[in-house]
Length: 255
Image (cartoon, rainbow, N blue to C red; front, top):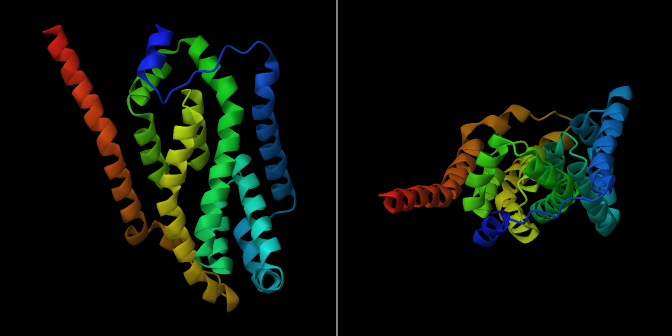
């Protein structure tokens, strides 16, 4: 039955049953790293947005003097932040827009996709096999619906501004999604949101340069959230239609 399900679903790939505990090591490293980072931030009372805003002038000067080094540094920091699921990646996106302008969209999409891939690969071997063996009824139902159109479901989740990024990294890994569809849906899905936040960050640049603190509440305004929700709804149409057609075909076969 498992082989038949895999053959009917080209976008899903359940890893072989792990023979050792080594499959859990990468996931443990990411979780332990997150714990360490959060502990350091709490001990030293580090606020990502305030810290970057306070150093805006220095960072801008460094970019003018060493633009390539700063681009590589930003990509590295952003990738690690996503890989370790550090809260506040949206602040990095805003600051990327304020410091680099529209090129930050490419930098953010690349960094976020790479970090998401690291989380996906770390979680995939351990979680997919664990939930497959567990036989959970809820997981089986979730997987059954996800298997119908994994690419479109993930695309919609990526576009939703209300879905935590780290959660969307783990769900496809838990359900055994293949790497290439995962990456394609991730890259396409995070482009709209990244562009919106970079746009807002560009507008914040003048306020930060003047020593003022921009109001982050604008991120929840309908003019920014509305288009993203609309795109999410559009991305949900194909899997919903496919599910409806599948159910209709099943009813016809039974009759």
